[in-house]
Image (cartoon, rainbow, N blue to C red):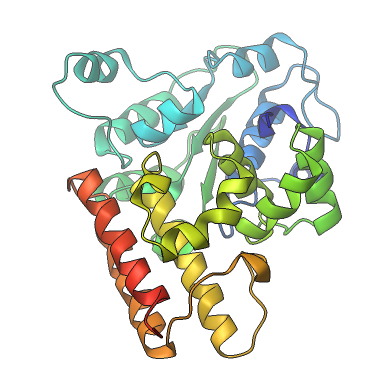
Length: 336
């Protein structure tokens, strides 16, 4: 399986880009649950605003400006992201940040820090280098710390004349209400199943894997593609319930804590659904293993909610995986 979602045009992203380009303003907020393409839509808007030969559908894709964005060097586009996200998406860090990380002085930040926000504010006040205005792209916007969010709010209240802001978020409720009110809000469109399926197929995902991964992601195509890009196989997802029921830590040794907690949340959801006679959402019925009691499964679900809050703490990764798998094994076999 292969393919990168930014290299394959998604019709639902193209349609939203076209619609949003007709609006006039200086700040947009793209909001919705994960996996619907907030980042890709934000980048498509930025590319269209800065394009030298745009049309009603968006950027041309081949001018000097579009090329500069594709290679992450556009002088009039400033991305404001946690350093971990920038590294994941291929955006260069500032020289000082990269030097600090290379010298092991600190780890990449998982939040949007105030010094990065100050750089963005200073960028917004400069003259456009290519004469098409400037764009500040903030993603995930919920990762701004409180000081950074307040600094952005002040800029949105008195924006420089030739800059546009596009904020993309999977948790709009975590943003300041005053920040949300300064933006044109847009709720992401949930793609139809057939369109999502075709998009994944065109990116090189096999037909059998598409079915499994759309189930695994709750019908969210970007989340399905992230599973592909993580290097995990669709077959692993189908075998995941059985591995957890037997307490197989080795099965998930290459998973991050976040990936494992996400998978366990979905497994607990489907096991609880089966207990009350509802159809599973994330797994095939034939793949669900174990026979937990309703009480133990409910208790497990609550434990996973607590684990979500602490998964970024500096615990031993191996011990955390062992503890999570042990909890799953206990809950999944509690009827025995």
